[in-house]
Image (cartoon, rainbow, N blue to C red; front, top):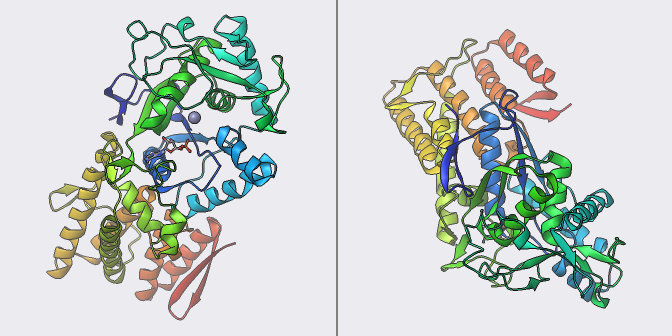
Length: 470
Ligand code: AMP
Ligand code: ZN
Protein backbone atom coordinates (compact mmCIF):
# COMPACT_ATOMS: atom_id res chain seq x y z
CA UNK A 1 0.00 0.00 0.00
CA UNK A 2 1.21 3.49 -0.80
CA UNK A 3 1.75 5.95 2.05
CA UNK A 4 -0.92 8.65 2.29
CA UNK A 5 -0.27 12.29 3.18
CA UNK A 6 -2.37 15.39 3.62
CA UNK A 7 -1.93 17.78 0.69
CA UNK A 8 -2.39 21.47 1.55
CA UNK A 9 -3.18 22.14 -2.11
CA UNK A 10 -6.25 19.88 -2.22
CA UNK A 11 -6.97 19.77 1.53
CA UNK A 12 -7.22 15.98 1.06
CA UNK A 13 -5.22 13.04 2.30
CA UNK A 14 -3.91 11.36 -0.83
CA UNK A 15 -1.73 8.40 -1.83
CA UNK A 16 1.85 9.42 -2.62
CA UNK A 17 1.99 9.84 -6.40
CA UNK A 18 5.56 10.33 -7.48
CA UNK A 19 6.93 11.76 -10.70
CA UNK A 20 9.24 8.78 -10.89
CA UNK A 21 7.44 5.88 -9.18
CA UNK A 22 9.59 3.15 -10.81
CA UNK A 23 12.74 4.44 -9.15
CA UNK A 24 10.85 5.30 -5.95
CA UNK A 25 12.59 8.67 -6.20
CA UNK A 26 11.30 11.51 -4.02
CA UNK A 27 12.38 15.06 -4.85
CA UNK A 28 11.83 16.91 -1.60
CA UNK A 29 12.35 20.62 -0.99
CA UNK A 30 12.22 21.98 2.54
CA UNK A 31 12.42 25.70 3.32
CA UNK A 32 15.39 26.27 5.61
CA UNK A 33 16.32 28.89 8.17
CA UNK A 34 16.95 32.58 7.71
CA UNK A 35 20.41 32.79 9.23
CA UNK A 36 20.12 36.12 11.03
CA UNK A 37 20.12 34.49 14.48
CA UNK A 38 20.01 31.03 16.08
CA UNK A 39 17.06 28.93 14.92
CA UNK A 40 14.52 28.41 17.72
CA UNK A 41 12.84 25.11 18.56
CA UNK A 42 9.68 26.24 16.70
CA UNK A 43 11.77 26.20 13.52
CA UNK A 44 13.08 22.81 14.57
CA UNK A 45 9.57 21.47 14.92
CA UNK A 46 9.22 22.03 11.18
CA UNK A 47 12.63 20.47 10.43
CA UNK A 48 11.88 17.47 12.65
CA UNK A 49 8.57 16.78 10.94
CA UNK A 50 10.48 16.83 7.64
CA UNK A 51 13.09 14.52 9.15
CA UNK A 52 10.37 12.06 10.19
CA UNK A 53 8.97 12.19 6.66
CA UNK A 54 12.38 11.56 5.11
CA UNK A 55 13.35 8.76 7.50
CA UNK A 56 10.00 7.02 7.14
CA UNK A 57 10.14 7.16 3.34
CA UNK A 58 13.71 5.86 3.40
CA UNK A 59 12.74 3.03 5.73
CA UNK A 60 10.08 2.12 3.13
CA UNK A 61 12.71 1.93 0.40
CA UNK A 62 12.27 5.36 -1.23
CA UNK A 63 15.26 7.27 -2.51
CA UNK A 64 14.79 10.71 -0.98
CA UNK A 65 16.68 13.62 -2.49
CA UNK A 66 16.12 16.44 -0.01
CA UNK A 67 17.28 20.00 -0.50
CA UNK A 68 17.15 22.58 2.27
CA UNK A 69 18.02 26.19 1.49
CA UNK A 70 19.69 28.74 3.73
CA UNK A 71 18.24 32.23 3.40
CA UNK A 72 21.38 34.31 3.86
CA UNK A 73 20.19 37.56 2.34
CA UNK A 74 16.96 39.33 3.33
CA UNK A 75 15.92 42.41 5.31
CA UNK A 76 16.85 40.85 8.67
CA UNK A 77 20.33 39.59 7.73
CA UNK A 78 21.18 42.93 6.11
CA UNK A 79 19.97 44.83 9.17
CA UNK A 80 22.05 42.57 11.46
CA UNK A 81 25.24 42.95 9.42
CA UNK A 82 24.73 46.72 9.22
CA UNK A 83 24.23 47.04 13.00
CA UNK A 84 27.49 45.19 13.65
CA UNK A 85 29.38 46.95 10.87
CA UNK A 86 30.51 43.68 9.27
CA UNK A 87 29.95 42.01 5.90
CA UNK A 88 26.85 39.94 5.27
CA UNK A 89 28.96 36.79 5.02
CA UNK A 90 30.81 37.49 8.28
CA UNK A 91 27.44 38.06 9.94
CA UNK A 92 25.62 34.96 8.67
CA UNK A 93 28.53 32.46 8.78
CA UNK A 94 28.42 31.77 12.57
CA UNK A 95 24.63 31.25 12.40
CA UNK A 96 25.04 28.77 9.55
CA UNK A 97 27.62 26.83 11.59
CA UNK A 98 25.38 26.94 14.67
CA UNK A 99 22.46 25.68 12.62
CA UNK A 100 24.38 22.61 11.47
CA UNK A 101 25.55 21.92 15.03
CA UNK A 102 21.93 22.09 16.26
CA UNK A 103 20.80 19.81 13.43
CA UNK A 104 23.38 17.25 14.53
CA UNK A 105 22.33 17.55 18.18
CA UNK A 106 18.69 16.95 17.21
CA UNK A 107 19.73 14.11 14.88
CA UNK A 108 18.37 15.48 11.64
CA UNK A 109 19.39 13.44 8.61
CA UNK A 110 21.57 15.66 6.47
CA UNK A 111 19.98 17.01 3.30
CA UNK A 112 21.67 16.30 -0.02
CA UNK A 113 22.52 19.99 -0.36
CA UNK A 114 22.07 23.24 1.55
CA UNK A 115 22.09 25.86 -1.20
CA UNK A 116 22.71 29.44 -0.09
CA UNK A 117 20.76 32.28 -1.64
CA UNK A 118 23.93 34.36 -2.10
CA UNK A 119 25.72 31.66 -4.12
CA UNK A 120 26.40 33.27 -7.57
CA UNK A 121 24.87 30.23 -9.33
CA UNK A 122 21.62 30.82 -7.47
CA UNK A 123 21.61 34.59 -8.01
CA UNK A 124 22.16 33.96 -11.70
CA UNK A 125 19.16 31.60 -11.80
CA UNK A 126 16.99 34.15 -9.91
CA UNK A 127 17.88 36.88 -12.41
CA UNK A 128 17.14 34.55 -15.34
CA UNK A 129 13.75 33.64 -13.89
CA UNK A 130 12.82 37.28 -13.30
CA UNK A 131 13.85 38.15 -16.86
CA UNK A 132 11.54 35.43 -18.20
CA UNK A 133 8.70 36.66 -16.01
CA UNK A 134 9.10 40.22 -17.33
CA UNK A 135 9.30 38.97 -20.91
CA UNK A 136 6.03 37.10 -20.45
CA UNK A 137 4.28 40.07 -18.82
CA UNK A 138 4.07 38.35 -15.43
CA UNK A 139 6.33 40.97 -13.89
CA UNK A 140 7.18 44.65 -14.30
CA UNK A 141 9.66 47.20 -13.05
CA UNK A 142 7.93 49.88 -11.00
CA UNK A 143 8.89 53.52 -10.60
CA UNK A 144 10.75 52.69 -7.35
CA UNK A 145 13.17 50.59 -9.47
CA UNK A 146 12.07 47.28 -7.96
CA UNK A 147 10.57 44.46 -9.99
CA UNK A 148 7.20 43.03 -8.92
CA UNK A 149 5.21 39.94 -9.82
CA UNK A 150 1.85 40.87 -11.34
CA UNK A 151 -0.53 38.57 -9.47
CA UNK A 152 -3.51 39.22 -11.75
CA UNK A 153 -1.47 37.68 -14.59
CA UNK A 154 -1.61 34.23 -12.99
CA UNK A 155 -5.13 32.84 -12.81
CA UNK A 156 -4.15 30.19 -10.25
CA UNK A 157 -2.80 32.72 -7.74
CA UNK A 158 -4.34 31.80 -4.38
CA UNK A 159 -4.81 28.09 -5.11
CA UNK A 160 -2.58 26.94 -2.25
CA UNK A 161 -3.81 29.31 0.45
CA UNK A 162 -7.34 29.10 -0.96
CA UNK A 163 -7.79 32.83 -1.37
CA UNK A 164 -10.13 34.10 -4.04
CA UNK A 165 -8.59 36.91 -6.08
CA UNK A 166 -11.94 37.83 -7.63
CA UNK A 167 -13.51 38.34 -4.24
CA UNK A 168 -10.55 40.23 -2.79
CA UNK A 169 -9.34 43.13 -4.80
CA UNK A 170 -5.53 43.17 -5.03
CA UNK A 171 -4.10 46.04 -3.01
CA UNK A 172 -1.15 47.49 -4.92
CA UNK A 173 2.34 46.25 -4.09
CA UNK A 174 4.45 45.14 -1.18
CA UNK A 175 8.20 45.26 -0.88
CA UNK A 176 8.28 43.31 2.35
CA UNK A 177 8.71 39.53 2.03
CA UNK A 178 6.36 38.79 4.87
CA UNK A 179 2.89 40.21 4.78
CA UNK A 180 -0.59 39.19 5.81
CA UNK A 181 -2.90 36.87 3.93
CA UNK A 182 -5.50 39.63 3.83
CA UNK A 183 -3.08 41.76 1.89
CA UNK A 184 -3.24 40.35 -1.64
CA UNK A 185 -0.61 42.35 -3.44
CA UNK A 186 2.04 42.25 -6.15
CA UNK A 187 5.17 41.04 -4.39
CA UNK A 188 8.79 42.04 -4.97
CA UNK A 189 11.00 39.79 -7.11
CA UNK A 190 13.96 42.16 -7.21
CA UNK A 191 14.45 44.93 -4.68
CA UNK A 192 16.25 48.00 -5.98
CA UNK A 193 19.36 48.93 -3.98
CA UNK A 194 18.87 51.47 -1.22
CA UNK A 195 21.57 53.08 0.99
CA UNK A 196 20.64 50.86 3.99
CA UNK A 197 21.73 47.86 1.92
CA UNK A 198 25.36 49.08 2.02
CA UNK A 199 27.57 46.80 -0.06
CA UNK A 200 24.93 44.05 -0.30
CA UNK A 201 24.13 44.39 -3.99
CA UNK A 202 24.18 42.47 -7.22
CA UNK A 203 24.05 43.88 -10.73
CA UNK A 204 21.02 43.00 -12.81
CA UNK A 205 19.30 44.19 -16.02
CA UNK A 206 17.10 46.34 -13.73
CA UNK A 207 19.97 47.96 -11.88
CA UNK A 208 21.73 47.06 -8.65
CA UNK A 209 19.68 45.35 -6.00
CA UNK A 210 18.93 42.04 -4.34
CA UNK A 211 16.40 39.26 -4.75
CA UNK A 212 13.13 38.92 -2.85
CA UNK A 213 12.83 35.94 -0.50
CA UNK A 214 10.26 34.06 -2.59
CA UNK A 215 12.28 33.99 -5.81
CA UNK A 216 15.25 32.65 -3.83
CA UNK A 217 13.41 29.40 -3.03
CA UNK A 218 11.90 29.06 -6.52
CA UNK A 219 15.33 29.39 -8.10
CA UNK A 220 17.12 27.01 -5.74
CA UNK A 221 14.37 24.36 -5.85
CA UNK A 222 14.17 24.24 -9.65
CA UNK A 223 17.92 24.55 -10.17
CA UNK A 224 18.68 21.57 -7.96
CA UNK A 225 15.59 19.38 -8.28
CA UNK A 226 14.16 20.27 -11.70
CA UNK A 227 11.01 22.10 -12.82
CA UNK A 228 8.72 19.65 -11.05
CA UNK A 229 9.18 18.27 -7.59
CA UNK A 230 7.36 15.66 -5.55
CA UNK A 231 7.05 17.17 -2.08
CA UNK A 232 7.55 20.68 -0.70
CA UNK A 233 7.36 21.28 3.04
CA UNK A 234 7.41 24.07 5.58
CA UNK A 235 5.52 25.45 8.54
CA UNK A 236 1.94 26.69 7.98
CA UNK A 237 3.10 30.31 8.15
CA UNK A 238 4.94 29.61 4.88
CA UNK A 239 1.73 28.84 2.95
CA UNK A 240 0.98 32.48 2.29
CA UNK A 241 2.59 34.43 0.86
CA UNK A 242 5.84 32.45 0.52
CA UNK A 243 4.69 29.18 -1.04
CA UNK A 244 1.87 30.81 -2.98
CA UNK A 245 4.49 33.08 -4.52
CA UNK A 246 6.83 30.15 -5.24
CA UNK A 247 4.07 28.44 -7.23
CA UNK A 248 3.28 31.60 -9.20
CA UNK A 249 6.93 32.22 -10.09
CA UNK A 250 7.80 28.64 -11.02
CA UNK A 251 4.66 27.82 -12.97
CA UNK A 252 4.85 31.07 -14.98
CA UNK A 253 8.48 30.35 -15.87
CA UNK A 254 8.34 26.60 -16.59
CA UNK A 255 4.73 26.15 -17.71
CA UNK A 256 4.61 23.02 -15.55
CA UNK A 257 2.84 22.26 -12.34
CA UNK A 258 5.54 22.91 -9.69
CA UNK A 259 4.79 20.63 -6.73
CA UNK A 260 2.68 17.48 -6.38
CA UNK A 261 2.34 17.37 -2.62
CA UNK A 262 2.49 20.33 -0.26
CA UNK A 263 2.93 19.44 3.41
CA UNK A 264 2.85 21.98 6.25
CA UNK A 265 3.27 21.52 9.97
CA UNK A 266 1.30 23.35 12.63
CA UNK A 267 3.13 25.69 14.95
CA UNK A 268 4.97 25.15 18.14
CA UNK A 269 3.09 27.33 20.60
CA UNK A 270 3.87 28.96 23.92
CA UNK A 271 0.87 29.92 26.08
CA UNK A 272 -1.42 29.97 23.08
CA UNK A 273 0.84 32.01 20.74
CA UNK A 274 3.20 30.90 17.97
CA UNK A 275 6.77 30.59 19.21
CA UNK A 276 8.67 33.29 17.32
CA UNK A 277 11.60 35.62 17.52
CA UNK A 278 9.42 38.67 17.17
CA UNK A 279 7.13 37.68 20.07
CA UNK A 280 10.22 36.99 22.22
CA UNK A 281 8.65 33.76 23.55
CA UNK A 282 11.25 31.41 22.12
CA UNK A 283 13.82 28.87 23.24
CA UNK A 284 16.77 27.77 21.16
CA UNK A 285 18.01 24.17 21.27
CA UNK A 286 21.28 25.38 22.77
CA UNK A 287 19.57 27.24 25.64
CA UNK A 288 17.69 24.08 26.52
CA UNK A 289 20.86 21.98 26.27
CA UNK A 290 22.68 24.43 28.55
CA UNK A 291 19.88 23.80 31.05
CA UNK A 292 20.60 20.09 30.97
CA UNK A 293 18.13 18.80 28.38
CA UNK A 294 19.67 16.49 25.81
CA UNK A 295 19.25 16.71 22.05
CA UNK A 296 17.25 13.50 21.98
CA UNK A 297 14.90 14.74 24.74
CA UNK A 298 14.19 17.86 22.70
CA UNK A 299 13.84 15.70 19.58
CA UNK A 300 11.33 13.42 21.29
CA UNK A 301 9.29 16.37 22.58
CA UNK A 302 9.00 18.03 19.17
CA UNK A 303 8.54 14.85 17.15
CA UNK A 304 5.91 13.00 19.07
CA UNK A 305 2.84 15.14 18.45
CA UNK A 306 1.23 14.79 15.04
CA UNK A 307 2.66 17.42 12.72
CA UNK A 308 -0.71 18.97 11.86
CA UNK A 309 -1.69 19.54 15.50
CA UNK A 310 -0.37 22.65 17.27
CA UNK A 311 2.04 21.64 20.01
CA UNK A 312 2.19 23.58 23.23
CA UNK A 313 5.76 23.72 24.51
CA UNK A 314 6.24 23.25 28.27
CA UNK A 315 8.98 22.09 30.64
CA UNK A 316 6.57 19.35 31.78
CA UNK A 317 6.53 18.13 28.18
CA UNK A 318 10.34 17.81 28.26
CA UNK A 319 10.11 16.02 31.60
CA UNK A 320 7.67 13.42 30.28
CA UNK A 321 9.91 12.91 27.21
CA UNK A 322 12.75 12.15 29.62
CA UNK A 323 10.58 9.54 31.36
CA UNK A 324 9.53 7.95 28.07
CA UNK A 325 13.15 7.64 26.96
CA UNK A 326 14.16 6.08 30.29
CA UNK A 327 11.44 3.50 29.69
CA UNK A 328 12.61 2.75 26.15
CA UNK A 329 16.28 2.48 27.25
CA UNK A 330 15.46 0.14 30.14
CA UNK A 331 13.42 -2.10 27.86
CA UNK A 332 16.15 -2.22 25.22
CA UNK A 333 18.85 -3.03 27.77
CA UNK A 334 16.69 -5.77 29.23
CA UNK A 335 16.23 -7.34 25.81
CA UNK A 336 19.94 -7.06 25.10
CA UNK A 337 20.83 -8.90 28.28
CA UNK A 338 18.42 -11.72 27.58
CA UNK A 339 18.61 -12.10 23.82
CA UNK A 340 20.54 -14.87 22.14
CA UNK A 341 22.38 -14.71 18.85
CA UNK A 342 20.70 -16.65 16.14
CA UNK A 343 21.87 -16.57 12.56
CA UNK A 344 18.31 -17.10 11.35
CA UNK A 345 16.76 -14.18 13.21
CA UNK A 346 13.12 -13.92 12.24
CA UNK A 347 10.72 -11.29 13.44
CA UNK A 348 7.85 -12.78 15.38
CA UNK A 349 4.65 -12.30 13.43
CA UNK A 350 2.77 -11.00 16.40
CA UNK A 351 3.54 -9.64 19.81
CA UNK A 352 0.33 -9.57 21.80
CA UNK A 353 -2.28 -8.05 19.51
CA UNK A 354 0.27 -6.03 17.55
CA UNK A 355 1.76 -6.98 14.23
CA UNK A 356 5.22 -5.62 13.94
CA UNK A 357 4.38 -3.88 10.68
CA UNK A 358 1.92 -1.67 12.54
CA UNK A 359 4.56 0.96 13.28
CA UNK A 360 5.22 1.56 9.61
CA UNK A 361 1.53 1.41 8.73
CA UNK A 362 0.79 4.14 11.28
CA UNK A 363 3.34 6.45 9.66
CA UNK A 364 1.94 5.62 6.22
CA UNK A 365 -1.26 7.24 7.49
CA UNK A 366 -0.16 10.89 7.18
CA UNK A 367 2.74 10.35 9.61
CA UNK A 368 0.48 9.33 12.47
CA UNK A 369 3.21 9.43 15.10
CA UNK A 370 0.81 8.96 18.03
CA UNK A 371 -0.40 5.66 16.58
CA UNK A 372 3.19 4.65 15.76
CA UNK A 373 4.32 5.35 19.32
CA UNK A 374 1.30 3.49 20.65
CA UNK A 375 2.62 0.46 18.73
CA UNK A 376 6.09 0.90 20.23
CA UNK A 377 4.81 1.23 23.79
CA UNK A 378 2.46 -1.73 23.32
CA UNK A 379 5.45 -3.81 22.17
CA UNK A 380 7.42 -2.58 25.20
CA UNK A 381 4.58 -3.39 27.60
CA UNK A 382 3.89 -6.77 26.04
CA UNK A 383 7.51 -7.89 25.78
CA UNK A 384 8.22 -6.77 29.37
CA UNK A 385 5.23 -8.85 30.45
CA UNK A 386 6.55 -11.87 28.54
CA UNK A 387 9.99 -11.41 30.08
CA UNK A 388 8.46 -11.09 33.57
CA UNK A 389 6.65 -14.40 33.15
CA UNK A 390 9.57 -16.17 31.43
CA UNK A 391 7.37 -16.58 28.35
CA UNK A 392 9.77 -15.08 25.81
CA UNK A 393 12.59 -17.05 24.21
CA UNK A 394 16.02 -15.49 23.84
CA UNK A 395 15.56 -15.74 20.05
CA UNK A 396 12.34 -13.77 20.26
CA UNK A 397 14.13 -11.20 22.38
CA UNK A 398 16.77 -10.88 19.66
CA UNK A 399 14.07 -10.51 17.02
CA UNK A 400 12.32 -7.83 19.05
CA UNK A 401 15.63 -6.00 19.38
CA UNK A 402 16.12 -6.19 15.62
CA UNK A 403 12.64 -4.71 15.22
CA UNK A 404 13.58 -1.88 17.59
CA UNK A 405 16.60 -1.05 15.46
CA UNK A 406 14.36 -0.78 12.41
CA UNK A 407 11.91 1.45 14.28
CA UNK A 408 14.78 3.51 15.61
CA UNK A 409 16.13 4.17 12.12
CA UNK A 410 13.02 6.38 11.86
CA UNK A 411 12.81 7.72 15.43
CA UNK A 412 16.57 8.14 16.12
CA UNK A 413 16.19 7.95 19.89
CA UNK A 414 19.20 5.87 20.88
CA UNK A 415 21.24 7.02 23.91
CA UNK A 416 23.66 9.85 23.21
CA UNK A 417 26.88 7.84 22.93
CA UNK A 418 25.55 5.49 20.26
CA UNK A 419 24.15 8.19 18.06
CA UNK A 420 26.74 8.47 15.30
CA UNK A 421 26.74 4.75 14.56
CA UNK A 422 24.35 3.66 11.78
CA UNK A 423 21.43 1.49 12.84
CA UNK A 424 22.58 -1.53 10.77
CA UNK A 425 25.91 -1.50 12.63
CA UNK A 426 24.14 -1.13 15.99
CA UNK A 427 21.97 -4.07 15.13
CA UNK A 428 24.98 -6.28 14.35
CA UNK A 429 26.78 -5.04 17.48
CA UNK A 430 23.79 -6.08 19.59
CA UNK A 431 23.80 -9.53 17.99
CA UNK A 432 27.58 -9.81 18.46
CA UNK A 433 27.36 -8.81 22.11
CA UNK A 434 24.97 -11.69 22.65
CA UNK A 435 27.14 -14.11 20.64
CA UNK A 436 30.11 -13.23 22.88
CA UNK A 437 28.09 -13.70 26.04
CA UNK A 438 27.25 -17.17 24.71
CA UNK A 439 30.94 -17.73 23.89
CA UNK A 440 30.15 -18.24 20.22
CA UNK A 441 33.54 -17.03 19.07
CA UNK A 442 33.28 -18.02 15.43
CA UNK A 443 29.97 -16.12 15.13
CA UNK A 444 31.54 -13.19 16.98
CA UNK A 445 34.44 -13.08 14.48
CA UNK A 446 32.09 -13.37 11.52
CA UNK A 447 30.08 -10.40 12.82
CA UNK A 448 33.26 -8.40 13.44
CA UNK A 449 34.18 -8.91 9.78
CA UNK A 450 30.69 -7.98 8.62
CA UNK A 451 30.85 -4.79 10.69
CA UNK A 452 34.35 -4.09 9.35
CA UNK A 453 33.00 -4.40 5.80
CA UNK A 454 30.58 -1.57 6.68
CA UNK A 455 33.53 0.61 7.62
CA UNK A 456 33.54 0.20 11.42
CA UNK A 457 36.29 -1.27 13.55
CA UNK A 458 35.65 -3.01 16.86
CA UNK A 459 37.91 -3.14 19.91
CA UNK A 460 36.90 -5.60 22.63
CA UNK A 461 37.81 -4.19 26.00
CA UNK A 462 36.68 -5.45 29.42
CA UNK A 463 33.67 -7.21 27.98
CA UNK A 464 32.63 -4.02 26.10
CA UNK A 465 32.69 -3.56 22.35
CA UNK A 466 34.16 -0.19 21.41
CA UNK A 467 33.40 0.75 17.86
CA UNK A 468 35.05 3.43 15.76
CA UNK A 469 35.10 4.46 12.14
CA UNK A 470 37.92 2.87 10.18
P1 AMP B 1 12.02 31.21 9.15
O1 AMP B 1 13.48 31.16 9.53
O2 AMP B 1 11.20 32.16 9.94
O3 AMP B 1 11.84 31.39 7.65
O4 AMP B 1 11.39 29.78 9.48
C1 AMP B 1 11.97 28.57 9.07
C2 AMP B 1 10.94 27.45 9.15
O5 AMP B 1 10.43 27.29 10.49
C3 AMP B 1 9.71 27.70 8.27
O6 AMP B 1 9.35 26.47 7.66
C4 AMP B 1 8.65 28.15 9.26
O7 AMP B 1 7.35 27.86 8.80
C5 AMP B 1 9.00 27.32 10.48
N1 AMP B 1 8.53 27.89 11.75
C6 AMP B 1 8.75 29.13 12.25
N2 AMP B 1 8.19 29.29 13.48
C7 AMP B 1 7.58 28.09 13.78
C8 AMP B 1 6.84 27.59 14.91
N3 AMP B 1 6.61 28.33 16.01
N4 AMP B 1 6.38 26.32 14.85
C9 AMP B 1 6.63 25.53 13.76
N5 AMP B 1 7.34 25.95 12.68
C10 AMP B 1 7.81 27.20 12.68
ZN1 ZN C 1 11.24 28.80 1.02
